[in-house]
Image 1 (cartoon, one colour):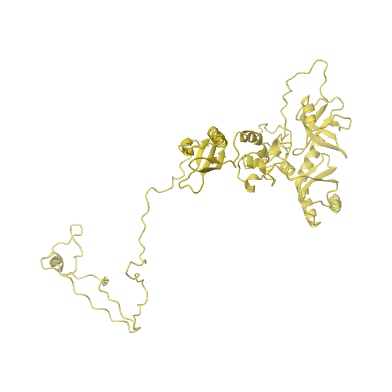
Image 2 (spheres, rainbow, N blue to C red):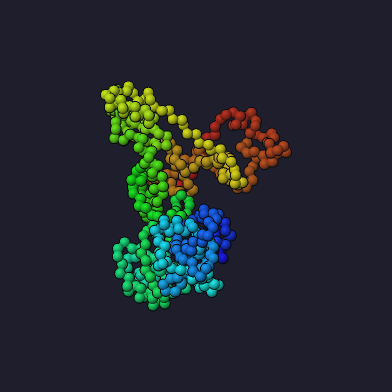
Length: 462
C-alpha cells in the first residue's frame, strides 16, 4: 500500500525508493534509524513491549503491545483512543524505543494506551475514507470561522481512524473563543470536534514544503526540538540582518542558524575585539571586517590619510601589534605586513553534459546594416519633403513654387525618340549603345558643358 497523501501523484513516493511499499502517510518523515536492529537479545531477555506509532504528518505516540502480538516496522495497527480507536503505522520497535521515550520524556507507566489489534481491510478502508474527507472539511471549517468573525487560521484537519473524532489545528495571535464555532462544526460534520492551537513552526512542520536551500523543510523531515533562534546567531556568523533572507516559511528565523553557531562562537574567541584600534607611526587603523575562514582581519587607516585602502592582516600579526601597543611600542606601517591575496580565477569552461545545442544557435553571425532614415534632418538643412505636403509659406505669407533645378523630372509616358539626349532602346551586345550621338566628340557629355536650368512650373490656379 502506498502513501495516501503523497505529493508526487499516484500514491507513490517520489524519492524514498520504496516503490510505494512504505505503508506510511508521509514518506517516512521523522524516521529514526534503528542501529540496534542487528543486536541479538541476551538469553532470557524478552523483547520490549512498547512500540512507537506514527500518525498523520509528524505526530507520533508510544503504545504498549497486548495479546502477545508480534509487530514489525511498517505494519498498520489499531490503537486505543478516546473515543473509539485510531489507525497508525509502526515506526520503531525494540530496545531503541526506550531511548526515544527518554528523549521525549515519556514514562513507562500503566497509563500508556495499548495496541488493540492489527488493522483489518475494513479498518484500512475507513481510514482511507477519513483521509479523503480532510481537505474538504478544512475548507468548510475556514468558511465557518470566517462567518463567525474569529481571527484564527485553520491550517490542518486530522480525522481519527474510525471517523468518530476530528482534530482541527489552528494558529492565532490572541485567545479565541470558539465555543459557538464548535457547535456549528459538530452540526455540520456530525462528529466530535477537538480544537488544538499550534505555533508557526509546528504549522510548517505539519504542512511541509521546500526551503530556500532547495531541500524539504527540516521541521517536517527530521527536526523534533524547536529551539529559539535570536538575531545574535546571525551576528556571530556575520550575516546581513535582512528579515527576508533570515526568515523561513513559518515567518520566524530559520532553525538552521543554530546548526553551526557553536563552531562560530569557538572561532570568534581567537579574534580580537572590533573596538580595538591599531596605533602605528603612520596613523591609527580601525577594524573593518573579519574573515573567520581565512583567519584574516581587515583594517583601514583614518580618513585623514590620503590613499588609505583596506589592509588584510593575519590574525597572528594583529595579536602581536596589539601586544606591542599595550607595551607602548608602535609599528611603522601596516602595509609592510599585508597579506597578498591570490585573485580568484573563475573556470568558465563548462562541458556540454546535457547534450543540447548552444543557446545562441539562432543568433545571426552577420550584423544587419541599419538603413538611413530619409526623414531625418540634415545638419544645416531642412527635412525632406513628403509626397502630398503643401508648400511652406514664405515670410510675406504668399506661397511660391519651389525650384526644381536639383530635382529629376519624370520621363513622359510612351516611347522615347532617339536623339542627342536619349539612349537607344536596344543594343545587340548586352544592352551597350553603339554609335549614339551621346558618345560623339561634340556631345554635351564629352564637352563637359552643363545644361541650362529649366524654368519653374507655374503655380496651380486651383
